[in-house]
Amino acid sequence: MGKLRVVFMGTPDFAVPCLTMLIKEEFPVAAVVTQPDRPKGRGQKLAYSPVKEAALTYKLPVLQPETIKTDQFYNQLKALAPDVIIVVAFGQLLPSRILALPAHGCINVHASLLPKYRGSAPIHWAIINGETKTGITTMHMDTGMDTGDIIFKAELPILPTDTTGSLHDKLRDLGATVLADTLQHLAAGQAPRTPQVEADSTYARMLDRDTERIDWHQPAVAIHNLVRGLNPWPGAYCILQNKTMKIWQTNVHSETQTCTEPGRVVQITKTGLVVETGQGLIELQEVQPASKRRMKASDCVCGYCLTVGNLFE
Image 1 (cartoon, rainbow, N blue to C red):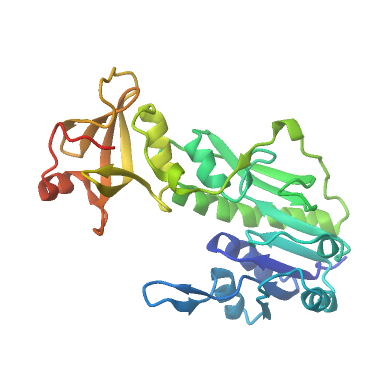
Image 2 (cartoon, rainbow, N blue to C red):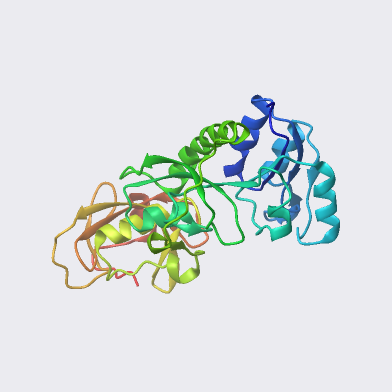
């Protein structure tokens, strides 16, 4: 059998290597579906999604429906006659009639080792929760949220120095590799179907403002993982003297030090501020005061008169 005829659905930067792989491997891509252009930046000018930018580079047809649940879009998709629909961080759930449309079904590339971390923020939560490994899963999509039968998994270690940004880039590249293998097996009629074990499932819920705020009563390790997990977006924050300060980089100074006042600055070093937590000490190395650029904490000490005894809320 020749290469499967593909419709690709994706939106952010994470999805681009998968689309690029399809082009390089000469899959016939009938169309690319992505989210509508959205206002972006201070000028609020309409901006293309990264997937749209890539699709236009390859001169592929682009569809941008506000919703994919209309008869108009379904008929448009049906006319394209795809053998398979590939979905990578698209941003909308597929209705059952679209799932049933291609002869080889709809395939999703997910940035976790399913069934753990189903949902929209698997990379963030894997780091926040202190996991030591994650990976890519491809699956046959069904009507649930990331509940379809697994095709392939590929593991990737989470290094102590990894942030969501660095891990995102590694998984983005791994996703294209696993998708290529998946399509090869799918075309040969040999793509496995391994049902997910529901009892092992967890959900990576969307991030919110409460999640982003540092609780200094947590152990130093947990705070460090939160900071890594929210870097480069949206960033962990705390309050100092009624003003917000984002914390971008930390180091666990001590895991076992007994502390009496979580959030209190107890030492100023060459590389930052050492702060008490619920268990152990954490060093703040890169921070961002409100309305200011990101900077080394040591520079912030000089510029903002931070001293031993300051209390972060």
